[in-house]
Every structure is written in C-alpha cells, then in structure tokens.
Length: 219
Length: 240
Image (tube, rainbow over all chains, first blue to last red; front, side, top):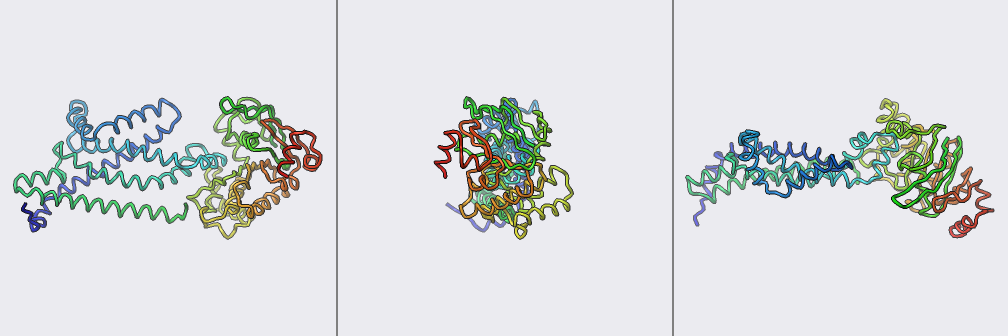
C-alpha cells in the first residue's frame, strides 16, 4: 500500500471550510441539546405523569433509535413538514439526539444531590424553585460536567453522520477529495487529525471548567 | 409558641404518630426522648411541615398554618431547623451559608446580612472560619455553622433533630455548649436527642415517646428520677 505523508500538508488547507462546518454543526447541536436536556430533565423529575411521561417517551424514542435514522427522518422524512435545509436539519437532529442523553445526565446529577440539601433550603423558607436554582443546580451542574464533556466528544464525532445528508463536513470532504486524488488513507488521516484536534481542545476546556469548579474547595 | 394537638402521621400503612399532643411555650426548652423509630424525629419535622400529616393540627404562635406553599414558606422563616447531618450548602462558604436565608428569602441587603451573619458565627465560636468551605470543617464546626445559619433568620423558635447524633463523641460538647447558651438566652427550643445529660440539665420539659405516642412528660428531674410509666423506666434503664 502506498502512503504519501508529504501530501498531508498540501491538502490540509482544503479541509478548513469542512473543519469549520463540523465545528458549527457540533457546537450548535450541543447548545440545542443542552437546552432540551435541561428542560427534559426537569420534566422527567416532576412527579406529575403529564410532565414526566412525555419526557420519558422522548428519551426512550431517541435513545432507542440510531442517530443516522433520526437524521434521515428529519432531513428527508420531514422535508414536506419542516422543509429544513441540510445544515439546520443536522443541527436539529444532533440537538434532539443529544438532548435525550444530556437529560439523563442532568436528571441523574440532580437526583444525586442529597435530599437533605433541599430540606435545608426549604426549612429556611425558600420556594422549591429558588432552592433548585440556588442550592441544587449549582451542585448538580458540577457533577454533570465530566459526563457532559464525554457527551460533547461523542457529539463531535457523531457530526460526521451529517455527511450522509450532503453536508460538507470533514468526513464528506475526505471522501470527495479521495474520489478524485485516490489517496483515501491520506485524506482520512487529515480528517482524523482535525477530529483529534477538536477532541483535545474540548478535553482541555473541560478540564479547565472542572478545575475552576474545584477551586471552591468543596467535596 | 408551638402547640401540637392530636397529630397523626402515616407512612403508607405505617401509623407512625398516633395522636400526639405537645406544647412548647415561649422560651421553653422541650426535649423529646425515645428509642429510634418512636416517631420523635417525624414529629419534629411535622412542626415546620417538612412532613405533611393527615390528622391533627400544629399551631405556631397561636396560628394554624394553612396548607398553602406561601404560608408554609412564611412560617418556616420563623422556625429555624438544625439537622442531624448538618446539610450545609457545600458550594458556599461558611458566611455564604449563613447569609443565604436572609438575603434570598427575607430580602435583607447583603451588607446587613453579612454583619448579622458574622455576629452569629462569632457567637457559635467560628468567627475565624467565615471564608472556609463546609468540606474543610469538622462535624462539630459544621453543626455550629448550621445553628448560625438557622439563627441568622432570627427565628422565634428552633427545632433540633438529633443535632449531635452524627458527631464523633469528642465533638458533641461544643455543639451542646452552643445550644445550652441559646437556651439560657431564652430561645424557644424543641430538641430531639439521645443526650440525656443535656435533657436533664437544659430541658424545662422532657417528653418520652414510644411507638408514636407520648408516654410520659414532665420536668427532667421527675422523668429521670421517678418515671411513672413502665415503658419510660425500661427505656431509661437501657440507656443510662
């Protein structure tokens, strides 16, 4: 097998727009996923079936079907209803998909805070909402950071599925170039390097967030 | 200050409080003793409605608190509570813990809450720990912060739910010391505890509970020296 290291640098710039596209789809998808996830977590924790029922159904459906199917469903299946272009479709699919996983992360983190914290806050006369905001959430968010970091890295790599709906992100770019220059391994290497770069950045960023939260000095 | 009349509480089918009457007068220290499972902690938690009950009533300052979230929250600002496991807010400093209630619930300006908070921390002997986080404190220190946090709301009465049960033996004294001081200053207190020495020395009235009812009540000398009920005698014989 022929592998030409020297072409890597040459083709690197060709990937920049695709790298930017991957980052956009990922970050917007995560942002949507965070919003959906936090909202769903609260619904899921509600004792009322009318609230936790839909939340659990959403999580069940999304976790129970492949992201690729969801992506195709939104882009092709719902084309007549939503009429979304490829990029918004990918952001929506990635957001809805990650929302379910992030909901589970948030709900678990909130549940992991001892009931005594809520009782202490309520015994001071706080409303449930204020106790949640001032006492429970700050502690729960801290616990959610490591699994969230993990989920974000998964979302980054999952964004490659957007290549199937014509989005010119890193993976599709590598395929397109390889189909004309026949250097499949080299093109995939460049795409991989970009993914690793992003993953590394995410990891550093998250470690910094964790350390800042740790600076509070609490257990 | 606190009047409990005919209180019944169920956990599912489990009838844990079977018609309890209790009165805590202004500046009175009531100590509730009894074996674990006798319902004494549940009773205490019914006073500020951390537990809801099915039958009976609790009057605070002569008023029945309606089953309404806002009324309950308002009542809680007048009734401080100290928990067995401290339940300090770990993401806030010691001073932050003490300021949280006044600032968030009563709308006290931060500067003023800081001043009163520092005063109460000084009072419980932790004036040098204001910037520490709860994770850095000993159990006894944590519980004293919890007492200061409750006091900072300037409550009319204080509820203590086994405040020394989670402490290492050598740390019990510092917490009881603070509570003794509070009692001497005329704070109305309802204390659930296993510390018989404290009950004997500080209580105005001791209630002995067993299986969800008050078996016997009276001044500590009488309860401890000449208990009338066999169940009280049995309990005291076991622990003294």
